[in-house]
Structure formats: structure tokens, C-alpha cells
Length: 88
Image (cartoon, rainbow, N blue to C red):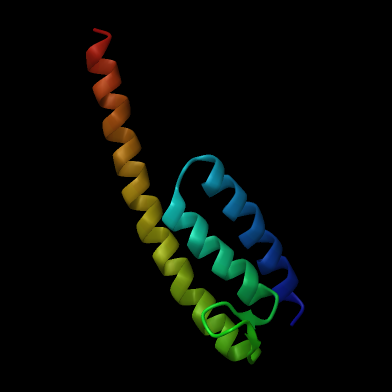
């Protein structure tokens, strides 16, 4: 249980960063991680669930974050290339 509060804080921090960048899907996933880190299931009425269940669900969400990050990075890289070509 000691790591759950830290996970919640990281989820909160990443949620704010994603929101500031306009990454809505990433923000939603980070918000879910924040709630799971608080010991509550955001997809089931915020009921309390076991730490094992929480860690399993967070692991799945981290995999989703990795996919979203790769997609966002690729889109950003393409935008930067387009901008670079536009100023040449």
C-alpha cells in the first residue's frame, strides 16, 4: 500500500501535464491511475478494491499510456517536420 499514494500523485501530475498539452485521452487514463492510486475503482462507482486488483489495472493503463505516448510523439514529430519544411 505504500506505493499507491505515490502512484496517485504521479497520476495527478501526468493528468495535469496531459491536459495542458491537450492530450485528452492521455489525461483520462492518468486520471484513472490517480484514482486507482487512491484505492478506488473509477470505472465501478469509485468503490474500494484490493491492492492486487489496483496494480493489475494500473499495469494495463500504463500499457495504454505507452501506446498513446507513441502515437502523440509520432504526430508531434510529423508536425515538426512539416513546420521545418515550411520555413525552408
